[in-house]
Length: 277
Length: 257
Image 1: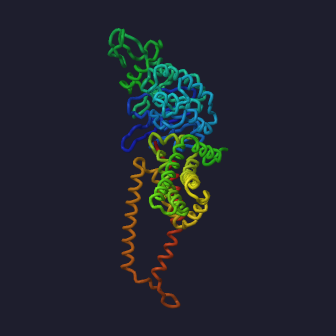
Image 2: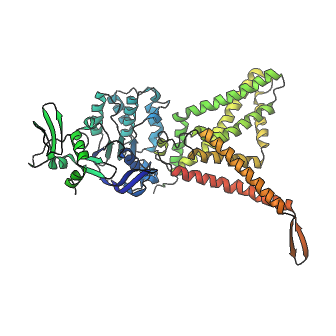
Image 3: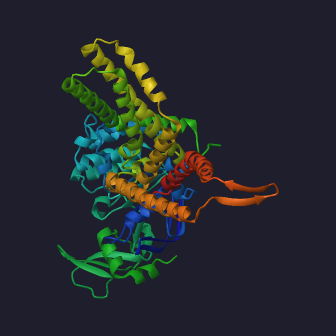
C-alpha cells in the first residue's frame, strides 16, 4: 500500500530523515514511534504529499504523493497535530457538507454517530470548540471520509481520558481490511491494544517495523525482582523491575510499548539486527 | 478514465465549496468596504454641500473595484502557503489546475464583481432614501465609468493583479508589507535601469544611418521608440501576464507544508 525506499529529507541544511525504508500493508493500524525531532511528522507529510523527499522513492497506492492527483487525495486523510486552521466560523457538519462531494465514500451518518460517541456538540461552531473538541470533530470527519489511508499525528493529544478509549473503540469499529492507518504518537499507553505493527524510527532508519506477535517472539517483557544488567532495558516499577530481554524461552509475553520503545532507543543496532528480515 | 488535470464536476464542487461557509467572511469584508466607500461619499456630500453626481459615485465604485481586483488574491488566499493553515486546501481532492482556476475566478471575477454589485445595491438604497434622483441611475453611470477604462489600463491592472497573485504564493508572512516592499524596490530598480539605458542610447545616438541601393536614409529615433513600445505593449499584454499565470500555477503545484 505504501512503499518508502531510501528516502532522505532535509529542511534546508538540517537533515531530518536519511535513507529510510518502510513497507506499509493494508488492514493494519501502525504505531509510528520515535524520539522528538526524528522526523515522524515529516514522514507523515511525505506520505501525504505535503513534502517532497530530497532523495529516494515514496509511493502511496502506486502514486507519487507529491503529484497530489485528485485520485490520490481522495484516498488519503491527514490529521495534523495542530488544528488551528480549523477554527472557522462553521460547524463540523457545515464543514463536512462543503467537503463531502470530494469524497465519494463520505458517510454523513457515520460522522453524526462518531460525534455522538465523542459527545461533541455538532451545533457549536468550530471556532467555539476547545482543542480537544476540535480534535475529536476532525477525527470524526476524517474517519467519515472513509479514505484508504489515514495518517494521524498525535491524535490523542488533548483528548480527555474517556475520549481516549472512545477513540480506540471508534478506530477499531470503523477500520476495514482494505484500509490502513499510521498513528504517530508519544502517548503509547493511550494506544495500547490498538496499534499493531509498531514502527520505531530515528533519523537514520526504521529501527523496527514489526507486529506485536513478532516482537513477543523475540523479546520478553517481565517483572523481575532484581536488576538484570544483562537485559536490554529495565526500569523500576511498583513490585520490581520491568525488564526487556531477548526471548530465550520461546514463551510469549505481553508487549509493553513504553518499555519496548526505551529498549529500542537504548539498543538500536542490536534491535535492528534482531529483527532483520 | 477520470482526468487528473481538469474535470468540470470537481471544479464546480470547488466553486460551490468556496461559496459555502468558509468564505462568508469575504462577503462581509466586501460589504464593509462598500459601506465605507458609500459612507465617505456621503460625508463628502454633507461637508461640501455639492451635488452628489452619479458619475462621481460610479467612478469611485469602479476605482475601488480596480483596487480590490489587485488585492483580492492576497486578502482571500493569504493562507494558501501558510505552513499550518494552507494544507487543508492542498489536501482537497481536486487537481492543482482546478484549484488555481478557482482562485483566479474568485480573485478576478467573482469577488470584484460581487463588490461592484454590493456597492450598486447600497447606492440604490441610498438614492431611494436620500436623493431625489431615480435609484437605478447608478447602473448607466457604472457602465459609462467602466467604458472609460482604456486597454492600456486594463493591461496594467491585469499585469499587477497577476504579479500580486504570484507574490502571494511566494511570500509566507507579512504579505502586504513584503509585497509593497518588493513592488517599490523592483520599480526603483527598473526606473534606474531605464534612466541608465536612456542615457547610454542618447549619448551614442545621432540617428541610425543606413545605405540602400536607392541611397542614404535616416531612421528616426521616435519611430524606433514607437515601434518598440508597441511590441513591448503586446509582450506585456500577453506574454508576461501568461508567464505570471503559468508561474503561479507551478508554484501552487509545488507548495510544501
